[in-house]
Length: 468
Image (cartoon, rainbow, N blue to C red):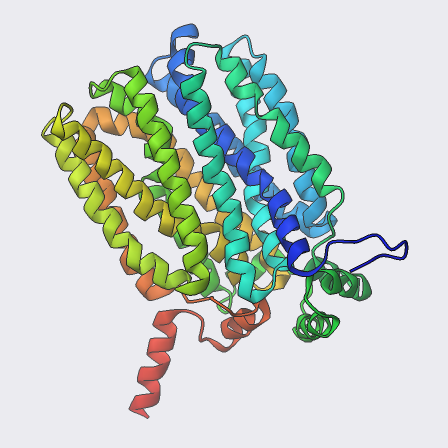
């Protein structure tokens, strides 16, 4: 496509790819700022004389901030738009990074991580929605999963950075986060608004202009806009989420968000170096194990990004979760038998890697995608706030209790407990999580309205039809 001056302008798939890439920088910051604490904590404990409770509070401050940030972002994004809300998150990332890198006390460190948490919470709530609302149905899966790929890439970069800077200051570890924050802030300034947000706010012609830029033809854009307008969505209050017709979306999305955390993935991410160091691996070996975990997350997310549009979201979850159960059972057995040397150490590392791949490639891939897809447009921002809030609330519980749980039960029983939760997650997906592959957001909304959204509801409807 060319503009009036004859210069080329991005359009169609190229533009949606560019939009998704810039937006997903919020995921890179999300991953880096949550992951870097696992390496920095080894230095912070010594410098600030942190005990177990102190380490958990410093680690968890960012999660509390994220919980507050995601709950507040829903209403803000409904009022001022998805794009501007992402820019606010980027500004908070910059402020938080400067403060945390210059912190001279535990109190300032905690406040700075609260600010970073506000940014992470807002980004986790709004970036997946923005990408989902601007993407065509057949490419929506991989583009939204690009956000999660950026998250795990940020985590991996944080693990590598932590290992390379293990003999340098933790301040440098945190300060590196300024660069992607700048890219996100200035990049978003040049991107278009969500066409669905524009249509929801009565700006139909502006929505048409955006859709014609991000679709392969004007005809496809006009058909999609007609489908959006036909749903007659208007901005709904929070109470809309409690209505029976929306409840299946709430159950599926919030359930995945909670299980994503309670299945233990962030417990492994946050505390892997500490757990392995306490198990006798040594500090350098523990940090290297974390780097391997990070690469496992990236591999699993790349695979998941392919599988969500080929296998489908639900099928991916059902195929990979059993592997996570087996891996955690092996990991729990290895720790219970104190297999931390020789072949036992390799079994432990292999089990951690297998669990990382199976869990990250399923629940962690699905959480932001399903959450951004299943809600009606009228309450999508608020619904996604609940998804992100559930995720961060569960994450707060996990980050505050993991080290204490390991001390109380031992690592073996802790990992067995996580294995049981992964098994429950398989059952939950089987009953309550629908397949959303290849369907427009408006089609999913119609399924909510006619009561054929959740697998258990469709099964009941079929049984009733046969009985008649």
